[in-house]
Amino acid sequence: MSSYRPGEVTQLLAEWRGGDRAAFDRLVPLVYDELHQIAAGLMRRERDGHTLQPTALLHELYFRLAQQRQVGISDRGHFYTFAAKLMRMILVDHARGRHAQRRGGETIRVPLSDELAWLGERDTDLLDLDRALDRLEELDERKAQVVELRFFLSFGVEEISETLGISKATIERDLKFVRGWMYRELRGS
Image (cartoon, rainbow, N blue to C red; front, side, top):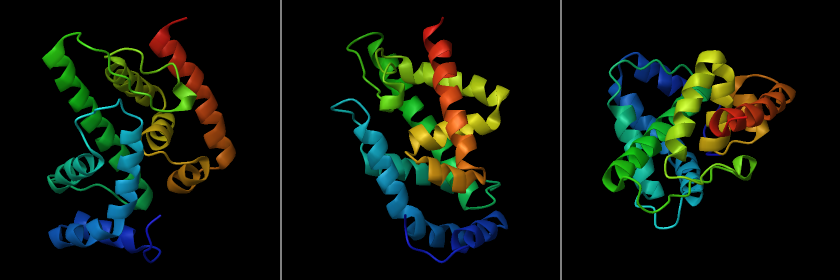
């Protein structure tokens, strides 16, 4: 994790939310290294020869964050949850673009984690995962946040617990539930 004073990220987010665009500029160096490591971890899980690089993913994230007209991010935990959602959207947009270009060409492997090893067998798996996460969010927003933090930002149980302010036992139960739910949702049965 990056080194910054406790509450510094939350303070800058409050200033940014209050309309201080310069607060975003001060926030970027504080979270850059941590988000770059997360982006690198995400890209290591992507197929070989992926055209999107970690720095490009991170810069696209910052571009989208900078375009926010109304900033509703309240604290550090909310920031990383929102970043996870944006990274997911960027990867899904990238997959859609590749899928539209090829219309069924070579297979893309998108292995998000060993915990979801069955995911990534088809070109459309990331798109299917995105749709499943949208359905999960309708059923249980917290469980969807847990998935985004775990599989898109590679957060461990302790980091998710800290970010969302809930117990590690609850996170572990959520992850166990989500693995089964996602398998049924994406593979049927």
